Image (cartoon, rainbow, N blue to C red):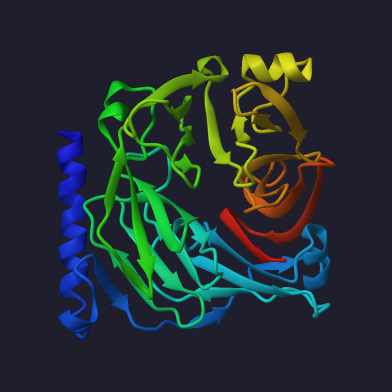
Length: 356
């Protein structure tokens, strides 16, 4: 019944948005693309400021260009900024002036678009998947019943977005009934969504042979030696609760996550610790290989690997400021140093795109 209700709500949202887009001709969009708006405004956002100059931030990761998006928790809006190695200036932040509630934004591999959904992992509410152009503000929506937690990937010459149709907790049996999907995205349009497998996995390698997911339990899926549909699922980390699961895209198949003092993490560290104070990393077999500590007075959240780099981006939860997420930081996974570079009121779901 819950699944039927969520799908009904999702379909109602698709119909409603399509009805509000009468100014866009049917011939101008694919059958799976709904144009929500052709362009958008970008207003300056002064609720946060940079702690480092633009070139200093890029120097940390060895990049020449960069873009950052995140969710402003106060308004629910998408916040955006660009970085240049040729400019020793403070970052300028901009707010997307639309009414969409933005969760899990992720910048596309070419840096031109940002994909996001309308609910967050750990909830079972209906969600739509949107992609917005970071230059023009154009927004398109995937015509699908339910789509959440988008991740960009490049397969050959195709740019795709993987997503799941259920973002709820995975310790319940009904999680196995939900699915993992992907959709091609090109020239501002979606192709037909393609089913991958059941259950719903949030993090996949580019060839789909390796997958992990969290949202209560840490599950791992690997393709078997048999048919293309042969997979093996495993429960990792002793079944202890985890969140913010992220799969590295550098070919090492490392998985990072945050926990609530899981037994394997405590054994690796050698002592108990406060939940989210450690960023835990396991290798391709699920063995804990690293634990990075958050700065004093803060806990990690929204930890995500940067594409093809030994860094993670994160927000920092401030224990002295009503547990609001008041900092954005880069984590050097080699040196285990944490560099804070943005300060704000309450920031979530940060994405960092860079160009070497």
